[in-house]
Amino acid sequence: MKLQDRASSMMRTFAHTLMIASLIFCGSQALVQRVCRRQRHHRVAFIDIYSDPDETEIGTIRAGGQNIYVRELAQSMADKWQLDVFTRRTSYGRPLITYHPTGFRTVRLEAGPVAHVAADDLLPYVDEFVKNFILFQWNASGLCSKEPYYDVIHTHYWLSARAGMEIKRCFKGSMALVHTYHSFVKLKCEYMKRRGEPLTSIIKQRLEVERRMLEEGDAIVATSPLEARDIKAATLGHINARISVIPCGTNMAKESSGPSATKCSTIQCIIPDLVGRLNDSSKIVLYVGRFEERKGIKNLISAFGQARKFLSPSKDLRLVVVGGDPSEVEYHNVRKFLENSDVWQYSTLAGRVSHNRLPDYYAAADVTVIPSLYEPFGLVAIESMRMGTPVIASAVGGLSYTVDHGINGLLVPANDTGALSRAIVAMLNDEGRAKEMGSQGR
Image (cartoon, rainbow, N blue to C red; front, side, top):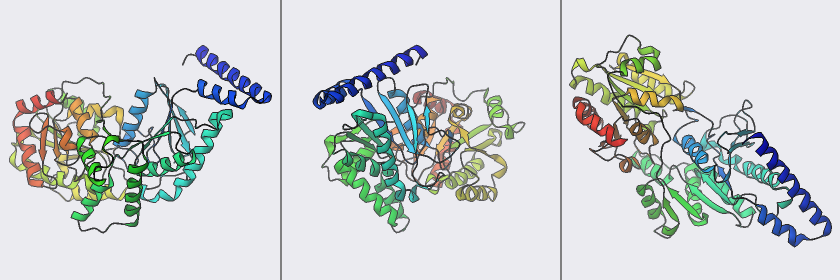
């Protein structure tokens, strides 16, 4: 907003406040309420307790597809709505409120310790988050606080659902409540059941919160038809009319022709460890994401090792892994597994990478592999496709919807190392087909 526009807006706000104060002094409460309603603009509050949209180092426990989704959605909506994103304060190094150039704000509320807290440990702090959200709203609405400041609350992930339902009750249901699950717990329960793991106390609480949201939410956003199907199945079809399928998108605007003869110089520029270790015929297998067991990274490492045995040595097959945080236990588990494998010398752990640098990695790769054991959507798939790089993914969750087998990538059974290896070999042995898949994905 230009300085003169901001000043003009401030003057209008001041004049409006002065007018309401005069009306109150005259005792015209009914007129006050009419003025409040007439002067209000459409306001939306995003609530994402666990993820800060300003976290940009993708692949760590703090940042993943959800951060990107919330940030990009807020940026897209901010030109037509007054929009605030509420998250939990995790660091003294970040301001309480960040004003973004695109017009929305990130508001960080106190809720528990000012430090990172694992998602499974955050539930006890949700009530404090709700209290501080309501205080912020009252301060923002000023003399119009009898009405909710926000017209719509859009909650993200189950912890935020718990907060959103409580806020709606505090204002007697006078605001619309929209929810995006990002990870529907029923899928996780099925995954745990297959592994013979008992449901933990926090999983049982999450099941109850997600069930209540299906009853109390005004609208549910599913990111794929498969997720919508799972939600409908969980409710025996009772809320079909309130489920909308809105697939994720990507805002990667950087143009690329995909894998090309120039990739050697490109990959060496972005990964210094590979300087002098690549040639123009090197084939890059890329992984982008968190280091979690459900992501199947160890399966990819094993499949990569098998693929090397079936591909010509001239292919110079390389594995580049983006993500992971040395402070995480799973990072060291994966690293140890890789070091003990026979492909350590052909692999690079690129570490944390900011989202604005990811296009270079996708463009430099010959194939992006997503070996997840379960996956609600899989934002990495559409980012890779956008950059013209074909995808090999597990046929689970939203990936089955995003990846059109044989058209823009290949689907393989989850947790099947042999099938994954064969898909890598097939993709890299047929450069013409791989290039066509990359073009179809864009």
